[in-house]
Length: 129
Image 1 (cartoon, rainbow, N blue to C red):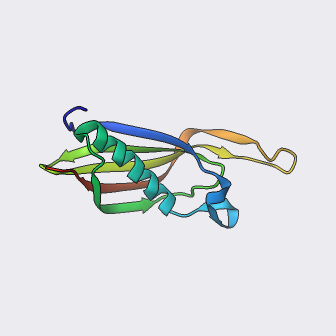
Image 2 (cartoon, one colour):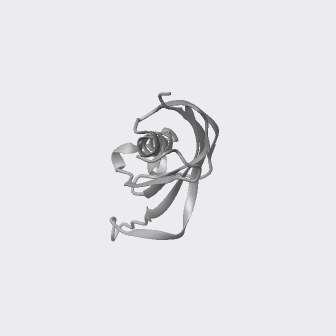
């Protein structure tokens, strides 16, 4: 554990399983990204405060592009403000690889270069004082 420092970053990568698709075109709902934000915020709080913390609020949530089943996504949290008990974080989800299947080769996929920014948010987490 270190002291909370502005600029600390935590990143997770995850494959989006087809079981999470809810809509036509294998689209995944926006709550999937918010769940990832909770995961990276938890690790960031553990690293900086030795506690999982509790999410207090989100602000400025932006769903910029689609997340689809078969994507590989990268979720990032960056600590941008440290209060006595509050921690403000900036979040992003990027798609770094996307399924590109065809009837002849359903398992085909493509690495996206550059990655596609699909969700952003700012959130506040509270840790014990």
